[in-house]
Each structure stands twice: as C-alpha cells, then as structure tokens.
Image 1 (tube, rainbow, N blue to C red):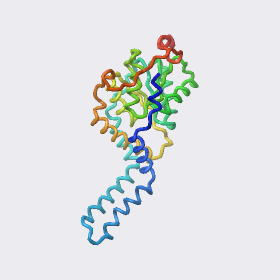
Image 2 (cartoon, one colour):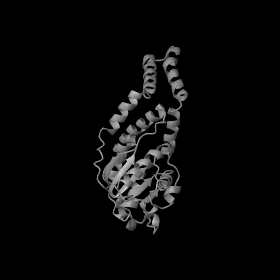
Image 3 (cartoon, one colour):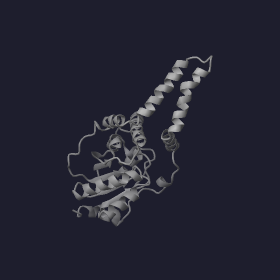
Image 4 (spheres, rainbow, N blue to C red):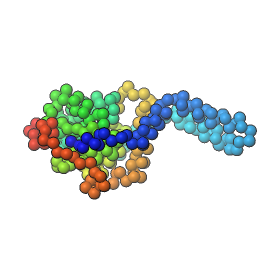
Length: 268
C-alpha cells in the first residue's frame, strides 16, 4: 500500500481551479450573460474602439458554447480522441488496472473489469483513484471476485498520479503488462501516461454513463483535449524513471491476503 501521507496532502490549486471552471461552464447563466454583455455593450459606448471586434468575439464564443453540446459535435470530438487507440488483441496480461472517474462511471468499469477477470485475461484487478479505489474493490467483491485477486490505491487525484502510484505498487512486484480500463475520452491520455511509466498497456474501454447530460459529456471532451496538450507540453508521455524522481511515492509492502501475489496464479 502507499504511504498514507500521499492521501492526506492538501488539494492542489490547479484541481481547485479546475473544479471552479467546470462549475462555471456547467452553469449556462454564468457563461451566457457575460457573453451577451460582450456582444451588446460595445455598441452602447460611443467612443469605444474595435466595437465590431469585441461584439464579434462575443458572438463567436456564444455560438461555440451552444454548439459544443450538440450530439454531432460530441460525437466528432469523441472520434478524435479514440481514433489512435489500438484495439484490444485479447491477450493475457499481468493485471487489470481500473481508473476511477467518480461515482457515475463506477458501474461500467466494475462490470468490464469483472468480465475481463472471469475471461482469464489477468489474475489481478487493481483499482486506482481517490474516492474510487476502495469503492471499486468492494463492488468487485460483490460480483464474486476473490479478495486475493484485488488491490487498490485511493490517493491519486490526477491521471499522472494514477500512473505514478500504480507503478510504485505494481512494478516492484514484477507487473509490467496491464489491461487499462477507463472511458473512451480518457483512454488516450491514460494510455500514453501509463506507457511513460514503463507499463506495456492494452486498452479496454468502458462506456460513458448514459445519464450524463450533453453539457457534462462536452466538458469531458474539452478536458481531455486540454489534458493531452498540457501533458504533452510537460513531457508526461515521455519515459519516466521512478527511481530518479526527486520525491517518488514509495510503495510499502504489506503482508496481507488482500494483495498476495503468490496466491494470484492459483485463482484460475
């Protein structure tokens, strides 16, 4: 298991800002009203320069905001995110890694992970994510997955931390080949990040919850495109060396039946 201090650290300012931005964009009146002011206010100020520019900018942003939630726009954005994901060849691996994404996504992830395990694709399922890791494991137990085949970390708050903390737990135990389970928009960034951490990755997507609103789905696409750019510029997709990192998370080995790799090969 990971050092508990990793779970107890304060939330980063970036995650706070991201949450605030999401709440703002998901509340139409907070977006539409300022943009309408930008469209009409310049014409009410007689000496203001570049009236057409500011009014036109507001109009364009309004059009983008409303068309972003169209089903066709969402479908095209999703297609761009999944176009370069290799198909699952169906081979066996060392472990199935399930990434958390919040409560609405858990059902499909648990279902996919359980099906993969029962199909003998891997002897171990490892769940990763703050607020998700422990809950996913409990749901997998309810589906009949034995305790010895399950592991989790519940400290990671970003995709980079998913990969970093998972590698610090699994790689010292010789686990290199993984089946990665997450939703289609999130898969490309996750795949590249886990490969950067030294894993051999096979992707296997789980569905986006049907109850998500169009605005929520559009937000997922927006974050993933921004995440790809951000991670790419920061070099997160390049090969990482955990041993050379300044303060890497150290996986503490704990003798427990919950994560006994000596037992896992006897489960099939």
